[in-house]
Image (cartoon, rainbow, N blue to C red; front, side, top):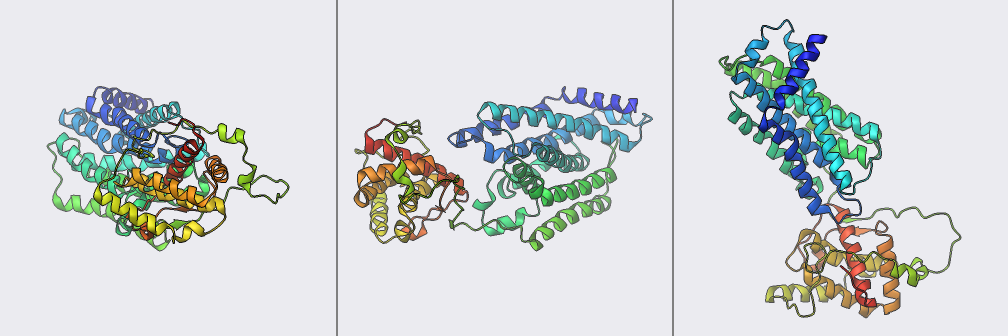
Length: 455
């Protein structure tokens, strides 16, 4: 056992001498974290709803680039040829490499988590479930990294094979792009990729129901990790000069592909491949505390102190998030035509007349929020149009109190994420993004109606 621990120590020492492995293991995940923070810094809890993607990228980079880069580099330098003289069996050698990589991935994940907490993220809902999910993700991707190391003859080949795995998982595998934003065919394809289940497992532990929600992803990751690890062991080479014949390579890749296909078929059979379709999503309102039922509507209880107490530090009008055209900004001819189409359609738009006054105003805020979420060229000119419509429909005092109520309760009511019936090609996959933008616009409208500075 002592010899095995020595082997783990040697593996760690060699890793920290490899600059490329350090880049993929530590710097690369932090670059992604900064990019996500820039995109989602205005969320009520920054990065919380994206930590599954961030930690998956961290493990994916360290396991599918860092690990095989280290192993192949050592093999090219003859390190593993010397290991062959060791009394330790091959399985112990590989177990030491896996254990060392697990330590490195855990430290990289802890670093990424710590920086996210400093940026404002809160603690996970289910810490023990998060620990198990992270270990399962590491297990699955380390197996894949071992396989890449045995298939690649040199370090440049590692980079090529790693990109063949990394980029598809980022784009259509549910790692960097929300599944709800992908077309149906891509969602079906993603069901066969481990990246999707990695994100689901971690995110389910952080913001979901913990073990009750992540059973399927854990099983999928475990099966994929075992298949890749067995194939890597079967294709293992001590020396670069050892060649793996085509038939043997194909034979050992069969269980890997079979494992991925089995997981995808299982997901399809269980109806897990597709996420809820984009459209109008009605979510249950947050449970209200027990209190005497009052005859007046909720917005009527909004006071001047509530209005003054809103957080008016919202994104600036000329920024990327929640832009708002000034009085002197004139739209171009095409945008002006779009605005006129929306203006005419609003007066017969059903969501503007459905539900109580609070839900109606929410729906109208979504007319500004949805185009902002997908950054349509018309986005900055829609908020003034919506505000004019609202002031035509409601007395100013009532409108201010309704908007304040919405800003204080952004999670309530239904959410609209598709504005095709208004002539706008705008559809959003993540309803919470739309709620967030509607929250910003509610505050901006209150500021304009009451003469308060905002931004």
